[in-house]
Image 1 (tube, helix red, strand yellow):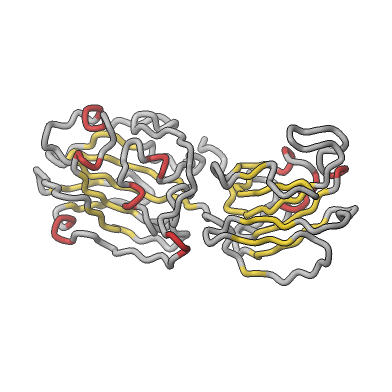
Image 2 (cartoon, one colour):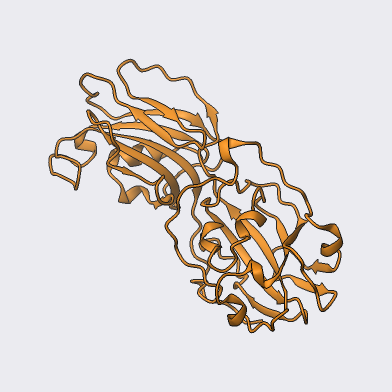
Length: 321
């Protein structure tokens, strides 16, 4: 089977501007049928260890009147609940007319190739539906007609006019969409307040009065995941506000979570992250000497006290050797 390069270019994966829309509006509970069309999916048999490239046996030629999927293996990890949620997947594509393999990701155990359902939309517009509520550790078989493919994809796969495809998606890793830890009680008169939208996006209310002179860290939600030690990059959503201002000077919630190392951020930000756990939400107030000091930094005036709300979504894996 042809292998696609690490950049996933053959499958047309490109980095898109992500709008932050939700597969589950209003934060509804996540539920998922194990198979969408039992009669059609009975014609597809997927075997092999979930860590390895799958083997697929089809009733050929396979006719696909509409998109169908089956969870061949159901994982027990984090669920995908938004179309811009970060994940790591392996994908193998087979010709539904012949059963022959067409293309696949490398299946080399590399967990550093992070993407999202929305980023696969150029090639497979239906992935957002197929992956809705899918969980880390799952193997999903998908039957697709050419109507389910992006522009030019059928030609790049060298499909005949009526050929269908079968795709196997192995969900290796799923990052949290937002902090999901237990709410924590914090007392702190005169400190900023945090409000949250239904999708978890935070907002900051800065009080009147002078900011604290020292770094203040409050754990707003306590996650149960791995600890942030600085040995691996940490994937976070954050919103930053200058004390005394109403609007954020920076936020990742309008794009995608940031991958950060503790030695590449200002000292106060690193202090807020060190020792925290995945799933936690943290607020930190950073005085100038632990932030950007007396020098202007873009939209941040020199001498500013900074306030950040940080959602810790996961730890990044190093590239496979």
